[in-house]
Length: 568
Image (cartoon, rainbow, N blue to C red; front, side):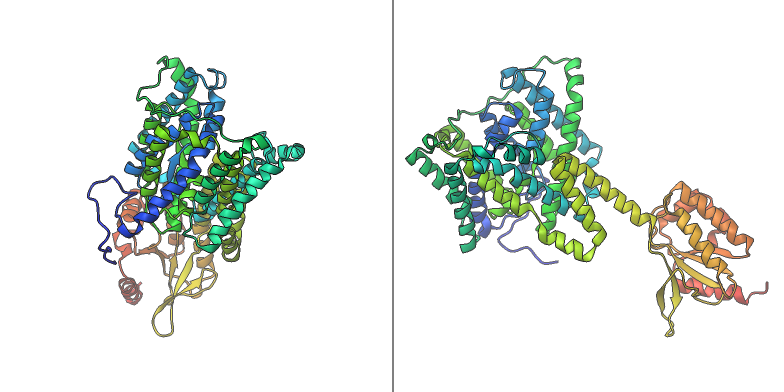
């Protein structure tokens, strides 16, 4: 293992995992990434307040305390936690009939949902649900991020054209775009194209040039100077400032209210768990980093506690914001902490200039981010190397685009589980045969190779459970029936078997009975200690005897040859 660079330092406590070790030479890049991200995220999170139905300033509050808490207590070096369209939409849908949108009562209920989600996330950590992230394969992650990219990019097209977005979902927005194309604003298109040209041009010159930052600052200055709003270009408008008040949600604390909000809180919890885990895993794979699902659960829970106690709505791990930071060169949570510091300054002193930011400029930048999330190279690689998994990735992307992000993630989890079950159901088992030089080699199960006359070594290459025990029984019967010469020993090489269920034990007892009826002895090679305990518990050892287990191939061969020389 390579020794750490001398500019890096380790931190002994189980916090700051997304920050340390710190490489001093990369600090300027991280700070610049945080500055760039702030310019992009500030208008975006204020836009999410329209979805959630909360005051505009609450969008800034989702960055201030929640993002800082996750940066300090989460493990992912890349995941950005903040306002998210999926959880904002779930919040608005649940609270629509409970209070007037934008009212103090409505905001208190939104904060209560954040508190309930936080409790569920921390409880999930205590009972160890972080493992759920392991059910997302690399294939479905490529499809997931591609679907998110298509959804994000498509959703920004109306804003780039100056058309009022209508409907929810990709298809609804496209339909609204077609129906209202006559509302296209040429000044708005000019703003969008200007931003696209600046961002793409800067990137073509050098990836280190902060194109989005230059574009956003430039367009704010031009909007202020030339009064874009007078030409029909919509801008953000006035944004109120001031720090949030620390308090618990001001609601009527009763069982009926919690009962009413619990299904929504559970839905939000599932979306946060799945989307955050998927995003963390995707970026950890991209940059060859490690992360802990359980530690991230704590970080996400604390972030939502911060949201609840500062009067804002649910926060979530965001693939869009994560890509914003990654695109700007951010490689750890220092970039996010820089953004927090900038937002603090903006809330206190600089909300005024944001009023001049054209909505189309934001749409153009987010459009480019969405396009970058579309991983065509990854899909092409999967297509060349694993055609069946390519269709899984495409299906995942399709569900994200056509139905929604949260449904796409759940669909991805189901597909991953099905793919895992399929592989376990149809393992690539083999016969171990002897090479001419005395070595060992693998042969297909369909061959009639015997290691020694009368001895077959059959390798089962997966855990034994209810879905593949029939395959085990069928292959054993087939090998025995076509054996020539007649078998005396049947050995199961079990090095790949790391678990067995009750059905597997039942099947092995039946296999022993079949072999015994043909005067064939059942033995085992390379059985793991835990699997041996399961064989003992399921009664298999009582049938085959404790001397039927061999730790090495040479011990097996010696025992077989000794038995062959013994008188019948």
